[in-house]
Length: 151
Length: 151
Image (cartoon, rainbow over all chains, first blue to last red):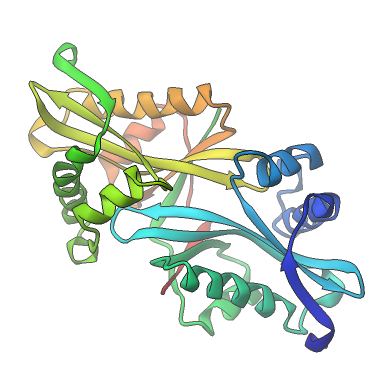
């Protein structure tokens, strides 16, 4: 199926569909009520004068079936890194390698930019994702607790 | 002691001292061999044409005794966030509230910029830090495993 999938940079008019996919991922993560983002805010944050994220999409016959959102992060130990915030393939198109297309696009971009590492988070019960990342020999470290203050 | 401490934005010529403090924190975290950053790279990454982090320092009588490094991150659920990458007060000046001065500076900055949340990580055995964050009613969530690929 992969040969019919295009991975391309998202544009502002993809954001309504991307917000649907963000919400699909939040539902999968049992956190649907956490999604407060809007199409207008995504357009401003990703395509306004000071973009704070980058977005790619996977497209099949003109329909966006997956996406990844990422940004440049910083490690005081290493230097510039790439943080993969979200990656999702909509349910009916899973298990065909679309996620790998998206992940590899981001990974190759990180390498080409000279990023020192690529980072992300995964829920400890999300076995399909954990098994996917293990194929890359990723370091999966449960020692660091995440702290957050909502402002 | 706080009234003799200034918190100010770092400049490029603070980076040799900041790298010492980054290393002091890595030693505390038992990860000293992970520090590959250099003064030249910190100057480029923080003060070059495309800065990827911001840095503040705590100063006492002209000596830098603490620092914080942070950057703008993105939550697909919330929008723009502020990620606190490192915060350290050098050992002899701990327990005088200098860490709180630095943390509050970053927190107020995040609020003033309209960030949706402030985020950081803490090692699960770092009780003094965890107790400090609990005073802010911070959400400390061990459910998300951190993934990393070194490039």
